[in-house]
Length: 77
Image (cartoon, rainbow, N blue to C red; front, side):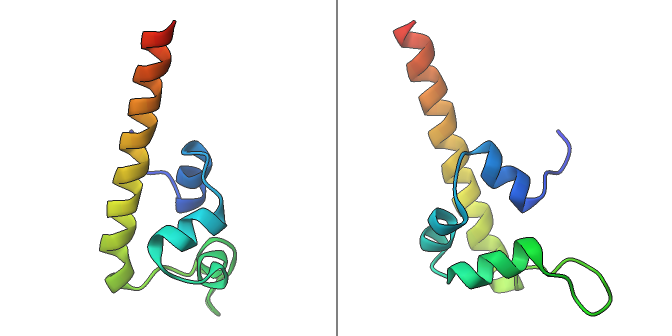
């Protein structure tokens, strides 16, 4: 699987920036900067390393939620 951007992953898991910020424990403005702003060199802003591990944990939770939802939908069909 190709590496999806954080924006693409949130869209895939049907999560809003607000939900993600709340789950991560940061402000909406922080998430918005990661997704929409660029550095003075034109590169995307990246989360601090201390946030990176927590982001991966949250994305794993979202992944499990989606898998469980898909299983439930398959079982109900």
